[in-house]
Amino acid sequence: MKNYILALTLFTATSLNAQWIQSGLNPGLGRSLYSDATTIYASTSEGVFYTDGIGEPWISIGPPNEDIYTVLKSGSKIIAGSGLGHGVFISTNNGQTWYQPSTLSTYSVYTFAKNDSFIFAGTWEAGIFRSGDDGETWQYLAFAQKGFKDMITVGNTLYAASPDFYSKIYYTSDNGTTWNTGSLGYPAGDPLGLFYSDGKLFACDAGLWASTDMGATWHIEYGLSFDSSGYPINVKMFRAITKHNQYLVASVMFESIYISSDNGASWSPFNDGLINDWTFADVEINGSYIWALRNFFGNAYRRPVTELLTDVKDTDIKPDDFYLYQNYPNPFNPSTTLKYSIPAGSKVMLRVFDMLGNEIETLVNEEKPAGTYEISWNASSAAGGLPSGIYFYQLTAGPFVQSKKMILMK
Image 1 (spheres, rainbow, N blue to C red):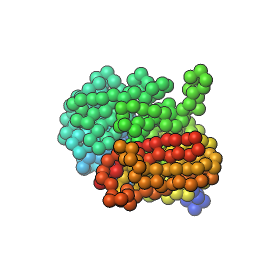
Image 2: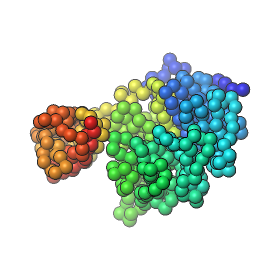
Image 3: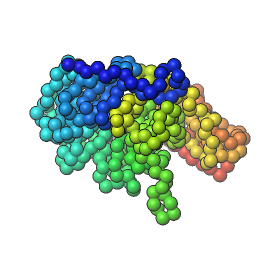
Image 4: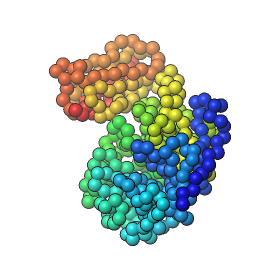
């Protein structure tokens, strides 16, 4: 029997303006969120909950007495991963009944990922498994003694994050037959989330780490610096990321929710209606809302995605250094946006080059006052149009010169 959780809100909707609203979900511990076209699911220490609307109500569907860390939909099946060493639970009737495949029945399953051919399960200290029949049977792939806290698929590549020495990101492009490894570096050690956006693969750890070569090498993108002795300072513990249009939304441990409008290069708090030092286990987009699931107490909060447009403004960014941002979208066809910041008035040149270093187009060649600027570039405007491939854009401003690559994909 389904249990209907009555809504308990902190404020009436009529009194709220541009802030997070608490919905009716309040289990012991929140674990993760999963969204399909119409429904958002919450994995909690009290099983799986879902809502098709605004979280009033959230509906409890089990499995009973299970601490569920991860959930996904595959066709008509809901597949849930137990953190209590009970493996996988499957329901074909929206949670009215559940059954357990035997293969993973003694492992703790922390994360799922899915591509067109397989579902992958990341376990704690038992490695990675895959299923080609929607969770009914599972095949062991690799890493028998390792634990995995998040996995994602990008195209035909699976990425899996493990808290090995300085955090390892394992990835495979052949569904687990062969694997490559990237390492975040000091002081990373507990990668809690992976996310891909416009040419960057992100890992949430001590600081936000990024890879622009699809996992081979990693650098600190934001939220971590070092003092003169090499000791990490100003550390922000990122936990999960989601995206709406060009806006990234992240949970940061003990600092609630942050947002970025420049693909992760800079971030600002997005906490109206929240306590600023909360920790959220996950963030997700569903319909017209951003959802955030608290770790302790498990409360789920929602906020309209339209408020991203009013809270993120270039005028809010006061640059204190030169910076060339990653273009977005990336890959693109045929248009993309290039963005840069300058801390003082400068002669600015922004140019586009091909792989051989031939200049394609000059987009900016003039004096600019301090500020942050955006310019749209349409690759079809270049003489004769441009073929698919890798191109570079370069900012020259006073003594500053920086280049980044972008991918035109027709």
